Image (tube, rainbow, N blue to C red):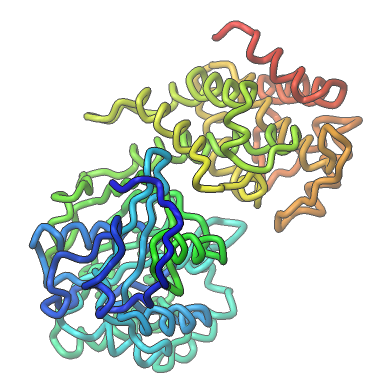
Length: 502
């Protein structure tokens, strides 16, 4: 690992293959012959997370001299995919990845991607028909799976789905393109590729399968049955905090490392990838670079959802009410750090199942250290985004689990009360909160009504379900919200920390 970078006086060099022979000190180049790589994976959605995570794992595997027939071809169908293809194409598909370790930054040039399919449906379908492509992986965000807001499952009424269902030969969606490619491979006697979702979704493989089969059923039920019988969709859990790239990150790489990269990536030094080992056409030996292949990903997902994602929710609204902007600043506040630790240890941790070989107490410590990493520049406003979607995933299931076990939920109720108080729109210092949520208007209405009737916030059945009728939770929420409405947030947090544990 290199030292934390200092500004370098020489003229930055444009990143490309030729530049690899004379990189600045402290920057590592691929140690393998990229011209000898051949593709085995087509990845749809070449964003920052993919390059910091999946592409980085493949790069490290290639560095070991392993599996050089598993290189990555990028792909996509969105307008921003065109921009990314142009940027990466100009630099021979290379990416600078800077790990923002507080103990010393590390810069690596990642060379595991060797091409990027033209950004149009026909080219994407053709690329996936290639027999060398044995895995099609995805990071298309939750919205790319066409999920219903009401049911959480596949939405057959989405306009894009209806369009593809009626026009099978000219798909416009990623899943329509995959179906076309699978149909062509079937007709040509080519075994189907494995679909490997790398999106941050619980049971992401099952979600991908449901969407692909749902659309295929609308197009051709026989083909849908064939896909269901022959295509593998392994679940995986992925984790690496990866901020967006802007002028700050581009300038960091240019000024501190002497590299002119149009699309660098910065990320934390922590990575985790846990995956089901279901790959009919084989897979690269990623276990050699730290990927955990397991029979069931669900416990790992639950650990991450409740401790890491739930931890983000825990600090978000308390920190926002206190006026903190950066996550690391909030973690330097003893009340915020104390709230996170107490709630996690006392109420969240007991709901996470034992995982062989995983020290959950150590995981909690690592998560807190990740949140405190000042180099990431992660923000409290980002953590506060879209609470109406995040709370039902990261906090409320933990409430339900504890209630079923007859356990207290005082800390979790306080977290929900902090969210409600935040939605009312005013920080402790009197400044206005700009509520960014798809349900912002409704949230604010119910949060304001909760000033006289706390139950009004819990009355949003699409968010809280039957929790509004759970006396233990509703009572604890009411008590916490009234305390927040009549006392500064700091006082309420301090009282919570002063209370004895369960």
